[in-house]
Amino acid sequence: MRIWSDSFTDGADIPAAYAFAVSDPDAHVKLSSNRNPHIAWDDVPAGTQSLVLICHDPDVPSEGGDVNKEGRTVPAALPRVDFFHWTLADIPVCLKSLAEGMFSDMVTPHGKPGPEVAFTVKNGTEHQLRHGVNDYTGWFAGDPDMAGEFYGYDGPCPPWNDERVHHYVFTLYALDIPRLPLEGRFTGHEARMAIQGHILDEARIFGTYSLNPRIVADLSK
Image 1 (cartoon, rainbow, N blue to C red):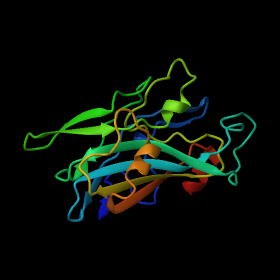
Image 2: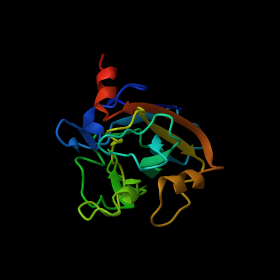
Image 3: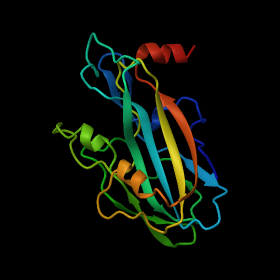
Image 4: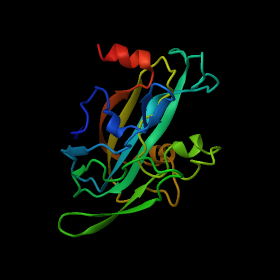
């Protein structure tokens, strides 16, 4: 199976249009366009009954004491954990791509609705896909201006003082079942666990992103 994006090059920087935030010289960060990137695939194996797409960042600090704090940095050597940015389940086999901005365009305070999301293919057939909640749900839980259930895609927003470049991994799974075996609200981690034993094939691409001005300057040289 093969996966690619017209929005970014595999292994290269993700453009700001697909990020939750961009650098700001005064406030460190400001909100960005937050559009989901284009994703396409082919060579789906025979016997596939549905697909699941998961985007996660494996470089999130395991401890938040230094995150986004003036005069401090998040050491590159600090242990890291997963942060899920997008989980889309029950993708029909007839679907071959997801258009840029199809599921996210601009930051939505308090999150986008879910889990159900209707999608109509070119022949007029409607399919019911499902979004999981992403990890901004927990991140913004204590913020009255943003708190809510963040379903679907929300893009990169790594700590602006992190010494490590973050990687955003988009993994497409071909499954031998027609529907993700979860009901109601689910997370990226729960989806990843639920598909174990049902994966016929998988393919992945990744992009990088940083809001640390020093790292951004180094990468642009």
